[in-house]
Length: 262
Ligand SMILES: NC(=O)c1ccc[n+]([C@@H]2O[C@H](COP(=O)([O-])OP(=O)(O)OC[C@H]3O[C@@H](n4cnc5c(N)ncnc54)[C@H](OP(=O)(O)O)[C@@H]3O)[C@@H](O)[C@H]2O)c1
Image 1 (tube, rainbow, N blue to C red):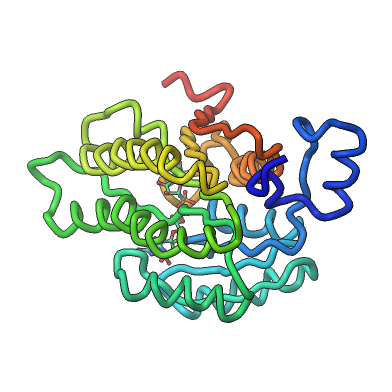
Image 2: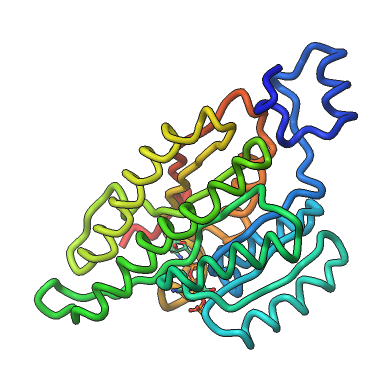
């Protein structure tokens, strides 16, 4: 087994896997790993952070407002599992992203998992969309992911490998009127993820790009009843992280089984 193949295996699991010769199918433990989840004060990011904490991963919570971060950290600590810390970070600002990753290293001793989840959308025609709204979408959904990966990859390399999960969207494959900026950001993110996995695979860093359809969060107004639940995205993230490191799922499309016919 290559060194990069065992980044998630504890010594016991490694021994067991080797003894029974089933390392190709061995599910791995996340206990003690360190994760940064961007945009983790609500919605999908919050569900991912909570699922990681329940796996005894140490997690850095972040979003733009410190009071939301503090509130989320306090709530997550009540789960009494992995360590939870938090820092305000606007992923559109390179300096703030540097501070976020430095904070993870300083407070939790390293970095193994980066989940790029923070994202925004505005619905408007190209003629009506304000230039500042265009920049907010592109800078958050695309440039912010670049900043986070750029800062995190050297630290993942020093650990001998790691995992980057990018939360894209089915809007990264299917274009819709009134969503040109969001489409552009998520189409761009898909290309970014697919270039990235080829760059870092030999460092033992796996990259998965999850493309959900409608998810039941505050992101779009109104409770739908049929949409994917944030916890189901979180469950997919945990499944990916625990999957044997010989293989990686690079592009995952997740759809509501029965969307509204309207
Ligand atoms: N909900 C859906 O139907 C759906 C479908 C497909 C894909 N997605 C994707 O899933 C991801 C999460 O969506 P969601 O539905 O969970 O949205 P949400 O409920 O609005 O949560 C978004 C999170 O991102 C944070 N955030 C926004 N801008 C940020 C920035 N510049 N820097 C740091 N944090 C920022 C928000 O906190 P603050 O605003 O307080 O900073 C919040 O914590 C997004 O990338 C979205 O594109 C969502």
